Length: 360
Length: 69
Image 1 (cartoon, rainbow over the protein chains, first blue to last red):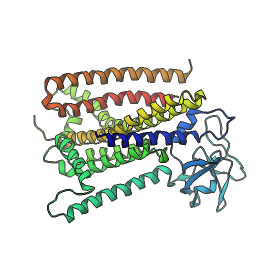
Image 2 (image 1 turned 90 degrees about the vertical axis):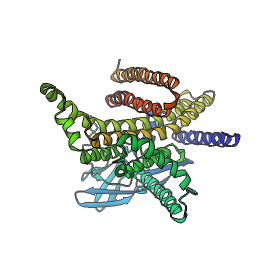
Image 3 (image 1 turned 180 degrees about the vertical axis):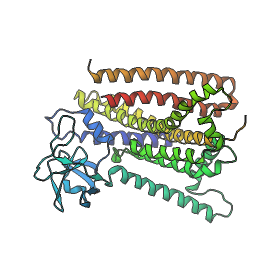
Image 4 (image 1 turned 45 degrees about the vertical axis):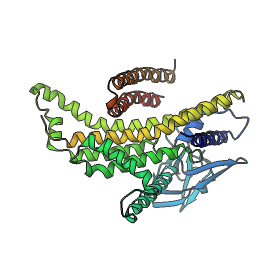
């Protein structure tokens, strides 16, 4: 690494660290109230109905996102700005005779006559119901941004190949080509095999780049909290795709190994069957939990290191906390790529197990 | 000790196990790489995958601890 690139990297990382530091500090709106680290961290890690950018003079600046609800009377839509940044359930929005409040990022529909949402001991609303919520939330919005970015990168690199007559990569294609070749030569061919790998390359490449770009977006402080790949629904959906691929591409040999393991005595065959069936479902489950927990843990560590400043309420601790969060941020940059890679490798491994030919 | 305390202790104990497991993988991978530097790339890949498997078990524990809390 030359001195210039080193300087650029250090500058970028310190910029990220300091801007997330500034961002986190916005969460204390009142000097008198005690700083609650858990609440602040969970607020950043969870999904939201509006895109919070920064607080300016105690006024939150947000991008309003559409709220789409499916109630008993049909579809109801409005912008999240109609809640006026309220998340405590006190601001009531009235649409077509139905009244909604937002409480801890959940939208409740109030029953007739109720003016505020009440909860029993088990956190269930007593005078309100939860309508089906199809809102374009912060995570969905960021997912679309990354989809557009991926489309832009890949369509423009494909165009570069079309234009050149010697198929040498130019421009952005020279960045994409080594990654695509890496996935093909180091992941798809060793795991799935020379014969079948072409069929699964589109899936593996999509998964790899989609997870990677979403992981990177999660680390950019101004978009911090758009924790897309740290959302268990997102990782579960991706893992289910892998599961579907193994189910629908599994050959006779694969199913035989699950239901009637060849080469072992009959009592062992019966004993192995439930274990193999559970194993079939544990694979996508572990894919889900691994990505979710790794990315969420990274966000939580960075935010809790920054919270140290506000917990100790001293400037002396600030260099330590900023230094450590900078260190973790650098590690997280590596983790973004490693987690995307591991998800892809394990998907390829499971697909490879399902499509393997009988060779013994 | 409250239930949160027990959950935190459990998460910590899970991390000990994962640390030992990943340490063992790292040790063996380094040994193997020193013996046969020519297959370093292959060893790295399989070490990463194995570490991911060990880590998954640890993460199950951590997630269980979070849910209990």
